[in-house]
Image (tube, rainbow over all chains, first blue to last red; front, side, top):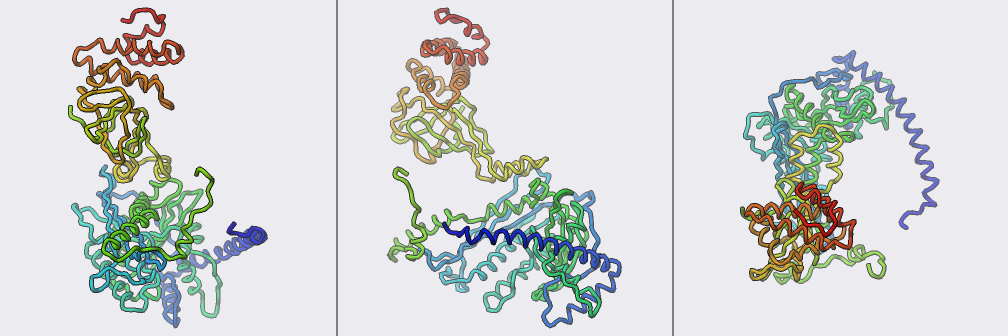
Length: 386
Length: 214
């Protein structure tokens, strides 16, 4: 048995007790935050400048939101609107990371794109790109690439496959990605990281030129961007501790089903890299119901945030996609993109075996996993006749 | 009518097989006669005994979500790899041009093509021998025998009627009565199903076994 349940039992009780205490604390902080966000709304212009000033005076400002044009507590319903049709795309990617214990070293990215026009009656088109990672000299990477670098290259591929889509109509195009538009913990130090991060920015620019309405969808966001902004919004000398409060708790109170929040600017250590039309913005969206509100965060670039028509399209499209999944709202097309991109364990094993055969046929001997991996792969007990 | 490839083999044994068909394309109805070319000029014949469509978590979730647009229905039928599975009961074979109602000597292999039978093939197979293949149907397990026989007889009877061979249908019903004369319950079920399919036989359920058929 892998877990010592005798050890765990008292800890389970404490887990539950601490959860109740934390929930009480969060409820209290949520009330304070609601009052603060309403104050920001009432004094929008003053608060906008005040918060920006406080953030910019910090030597190392934390990730937070900044007010733009909308009042902070404002909500927006998705009113019926004649769109004339649109095309929606979504991409996702998965990867095989080289493991030191595998029989053969594989660095591979699998990226999918789904595209269709709602109301067309036609099945979505599915495109999948599978590629080994190559180095600068055009050779397959055999080295021990870090998971972070492979993740970055996967993120670039997900955006790139969206940018490759060719429109055959004049309909507006919405391009969805899973997760934030801002690359996590990028840019890092190092030539490789900088190179791929620049590629990412260049692809974003190309999407701007193509006039696509790009958005990154985050389900169950744990961020406290607005909460941090509210902490900065209080007058000098006053400190408000809203730690452990998440934005979604706030917006469950503020947004009715189908409503989105105001659009905020995202300020982070990398936001200076996303300049001009690429500047990162976001809003919160309630895709749930009256009984079960469900908050998602939607990141959009500056060219979408400043275009009311594109923002509306993104809002409408996300609600339509989430409605398809019924009681567990999540954009259907994003889920399907994930289904088409994911590399299952069995597929990886088949590829490893295939590569091992190819290598052996070229006289390089038999490839074996490490003894440690071999021990992990040993089968469990079985009965006679099984 | 030409043969149409309806799918590929998933798994098989000596008595039958399961084939996968893409959900977006037509597949043969229950009780249809189908064939599978094997090696060495051998061809296996079988009847479709079950048509199985699996669900998965996403389909279940979509089914209760309310209005499902046509694009999403098409996505699940065309793009997602959830084939329609046909279960087939072997009822005979053809080798060197000769039809036999013995089971194929070996089952087909994975991904072998499976075809619907043309009307000519249906007539040829069902008029060979003395309907000996009925024994495979009557001894099948986990199969709705009465409905299967009725569906098959409807298809084969229709094919024979096209060439004005109205005797085949009568002969088939007589053979069923002969084979099931000691199992009244099963015979009643089968004759009831046939009477549903062929109103001209609606009186045969009430007839003693010795009465002449229409």
